[in-house]
Image (cartoon, rainbow over all chains, first blue to last red):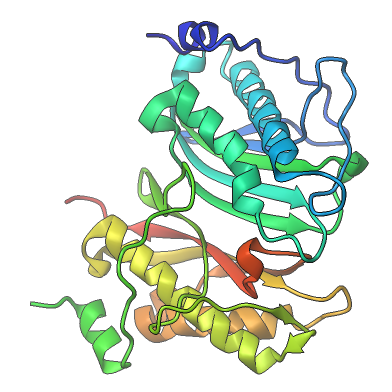
Length: 153
Length: 157
């Protein structure tokens, strides 16, 4: 099954990736690796969600936002690979950054939102090495930012 | 017959922890060609406890160094689990050391040295790596240090 078919089966529509917010690119190729810039969550209404885990935002909400970030990352992969998601060979590495209060401890449960999505969409090839950590602030007050390294065919 | 690195670990009196399961849908290590990407690891001590606390708020730099060294031991265990044989580690390439620190803390390098020194003790000059050492406002389960690494692997096998 192609990845596009798999997305359809999961009832997933990929969001549009906005323009970069500075002199950088969303994705850069180095040999067979594709490095993706840190992405924030997308809302269907086009607004960036704001919030901090452990200070008003629940782990469940954080999980949903991390899943949304995963969708934006898949959309960025698609843009970088000429529209062909089947060229994603493996998700290698994820760095999940959670906007969190100092006493927050459940970062893995938040970033699972993105990791679970990658396994749903790419199967075992979507399983990756990962770090999940807490940031004292993130751009535009977003609750989650995630960057990823992908191996491409 | 133990390999060269296993013998070196025994010489240093270092016991590697047993294989553990990740706490989510991810892996402790993933291979990309000749590079092995290791997930961020915790300080897991031989008595089964995991370190807790924030540097600059109860935990000293010396204690942070000890915690970072233990994270390094956990990382070497993850390399062993992924490669089967630690002699296949060709180079430690890159380390990202993340310290759970109060906002005014400034000595992150002296904490992460605990891991970097260990890699050089165990792997010799090949253990010397590029590194960033930075402060985090929080870490999973309140651990004081989380470290991820990229290692180059000897091709074959």
